[in-house]
Amino acid sequence: MAHSFSDNRHPFDTMTLTGQGTVMATPDMAVIRLGVQTTGYDLPQIQADNAQISQRIIQSLSQAGYTDIRTIQYSIDRIYEYQDGNPIDKGYSVRNMIEIRTNYIDQAGNIIDTAVNMGANVVDSISFELSDPQLYYQHALNLAVDNAIQKAKSIAANLRIKLSPVPVRIIEGGAPAVPLQQFQREAAATPILPGEMRIEASITADFLYS
Image 1 (cartoon, rainbow, N blue to C red):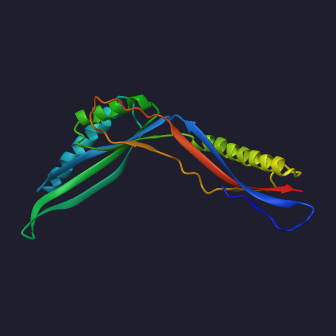
Image 2: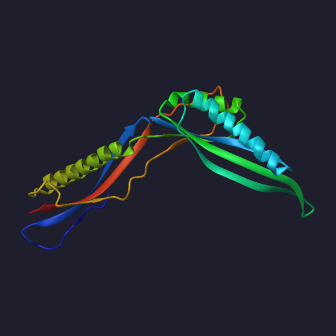
Image 3: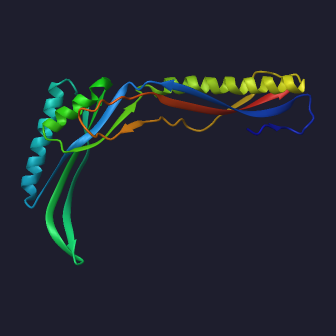
């Protein structure tokens, strides 16, 4: 990594260094996105069918103790198939997608199975997240500062210069990106394991030396 030193000869000069910090964390929240898609020519009927199945899914999940549920998409689309360049009307598609959040991440498979058994025919994704990502990011940020300080001390010792080990300026390296772990469901019997997540932070720091 490039290091820059000031050229001005004052009682104190400045070195600018970067620091990186990394923290590994185990996700504590599962987010499942699934829903119901119905098709047909009678729009009021397929809307009613969709609503009935969706309500049955939500009730079953709520009765099982999963109450953090919200609608994330509801759409009605015309369906066309093309033959010899000519559109053929195939009716309508009604799609209702919900999102379920739970801190019981080992229950993600059960949530999907319950929904599918109640009529869900679209399983979009499962993602694992942190309920308090800032806690881990702050730790990574402190490690990034420590990393820059250790670099400054190493350079000072090598060049035999006097260093003020406390940085006079610290610039955070952009907004933290909270990583997600996403999985596509292949089979209900397949265990879903979240693994670990990497949280990274970076800073740029100025140190005085003479």
